[in-house]
Amino acid sequence: QVQLVESGGGLVQAGGSLRLSCVVSGRTFSTYAMGWFRQAPGKEREFVAGISRVSVTRYQESVKERFAISRDNAKNTVYLQMNNLKPEDTAIYYCAGDRGGLPTVRVGPAAYDTWGQGTQVTVSS
Image (cartoon, rainbow, N blue to C red; front, side, top):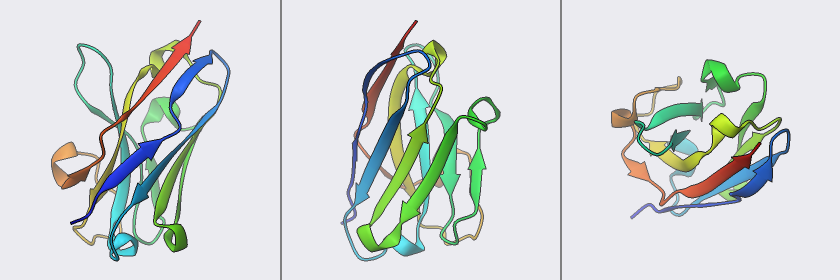
């Protein structure tokens, strides 16, 4: 059974940086597209960034110039580097896996069949 474990969240001042990591158990990581989603209190879960199995990337427009997603298949890990953080980035961040095998990134949460437990990111003004 595939499991996802996120780490790297925390409290940071506006303008600061954090790097989230998501370690995926199992042997099939390289075949998954991976995504980062976030959910703020009272809001729906939203797509932040994704990377396909062939490393095609896709971003939500509001983070495009500030966040970078990457993957290391040798370490079964996907990363989200977050720079110039803003208070509106405050949310629980979730890592998710899409085993659909497409060479592209899907943005709908329903496309992702495996989820981590989430890590809290809080950005103070």
